[in-house]
Length: 446
Image: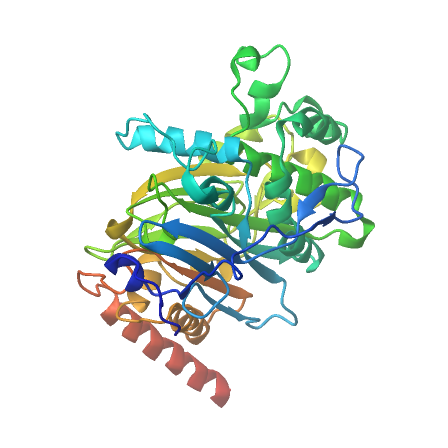
């Protein structure tokens, strides 16, 4: 692992992911802008975005650092095809550059929730010395897990484009995006945009809006991705779930990488049955941040009550929307879109005190179908390398009979490597491994 060569604070220097000191010649520059892609966006024009980047620049109190999110130690990734003939899961790790106004309002709202008095917002309006405000724009880390079905076309589309759509999301595009969604007809004919409804002319909050926020940018990006996937013949009948985590520091006036910050903003945008969970550092307890969007869930069954499409139970006891789909929210799935399978994500926001949390995990349902949240957390105990932790999660899921595609992203937080408490699932995991081994032996004898 690379070591920090600058005189950073002790917390930053001891953090797992690699950082290096910047010199004037090596400082990050804004990538050139380029035409987005040829897919049909709802606003009928080509989007413009920055080149995809995994690098972040931080001007800390003790010097400047550059972080590459794809370097060893920054995030752990592991995948398995399981027993499926091909891999339909996809994942993405990027640094996104958000408009200064959106990041500013996100910091204000989150820091107010943490009991902070915003007397001065250094780093946002150009008052910070040496251009810190410009650097702060690209300090949001983007992590995504996409679980495709009916083919890998839609999950691959999300891997390549969703982070750029978040980066490009603008309030001026909301009306046309919702209009395009409504034009699909059926259930969507009366769709108002969910969390974006306040941007609709005539809504009570229309004249009071202060600009688009980070969570609203995520919702808009998901809807634009859905419109684009539905307009692209290459995606066919495929679809995908998605769980995206957006992380950035709330430390002011200087900021640190997310894995070394005293205060963090975490925004989860989620649809389907991919998942996100946190592990506490004091006791190593799992905290689920998402719930699956299945037809038998209370909120989804109520939402779909007027659609007229039934929820059937298959021979395995699983609910199927329209007798086919396990998920009632997703990107793509054009055959079911007018029946109510929407691409609007559920948003979860948290302000995290950095040292209180050890890591964040994003997984596809190939993991959570065969493992409990606490088993996932306990498998990561005592491991310094997040890649090894991700491999242990996927490996255990395979060993206990996981058959679906499997993906695990392990994202270290400031409490990484210092998780306390007891491994409460060790005995259960050993029992499950013995049971699985016995089952495999019996099958070989048949």
